[in-house]
Amino acid sequence: MDKVHNHNVKLRPYSRLMHWYRWSDVYIPLFNPTARLALKMKYMKNLQTVNAFVKDKETEMQTWFEKTNFFFGFSSPRSGTVFLTDFFLSELKGGVVEHEANIVDYPAFTQAIQSQEVALGYFENFRKKDIFFRTKGEPIDFYGEINPFLRMHAKAIGELIPHAKRFHIIRDGREVVRSVMSRDKLGKKDPMAVNISPPSNDPYYSKWKEMSRFEKVCWQWQFSNRFLRENVPHTVYFKKLRSDYPYFKENILDYLNLDIAEAAWQDYVSQPKNRSAKYRMPHWKDWTQEQTDTFWRICGEEMKAYGFE
Image (cartoon, rainbow, N blue to C red; front, top):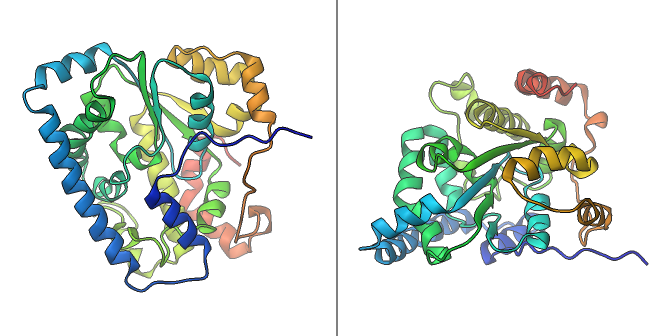
């Protein structure tokens, strides 16, 4: 009997709640505003906590950041961040690897869509301190986050932690859109959907309110990946990370100066995982002509930039 892999990435309470809510047949009318208020209160509490922790430790924090090796992986949702984080947690010692390290990154993401100045302020005034607080400033070999919520902060992170290795995981947009559409992102059960819209200089800004959810999900894929393509120095293909060890070694391990044996990688990618994929939308080969045309109209430029056909 095949060994079944149990995930090392542990869902935090909010994520577990949202996972249940999205897959249930229940709709709670006041859930979304309540969740937004709770996240706002959590951010304010976290900000107070980290400010108290770093008070009189600014020099110590700066030294810690300069001496610590950092890496950050970014992607649109459903693009392999759990896979890579989970594998790293299985194999790497001596450092910290996080997935969605702080749930308040989600509302911060919606604000960063609109302003890179706001994105820079969030990471400089809160998130850097949050990293220092969660590690207690202890000596570690590395600190890594593979976090889709921080994708609109990728440029800010490069400015604030210039020695951090940053990489972008890209996955075929059709597969991502199918997966996101199956999870009610940007739907009526997404607390942050009301706060997500294109910035005023985006071609879809004036059309947003009339766009279908499918169109909005397509827009978010192309918008996120264009931003990452333009602001992150290293791009890797999700499919190849799971199927080609030499590619994985060259583009992830060597790039990040990490060492994981091929046998460990092979063992991991060959194990059946403990959850089966669930989809509420058919495979992209079975989409309607209208869906296919809509996808290529919105995402075609980015798909071609990455060589997807």
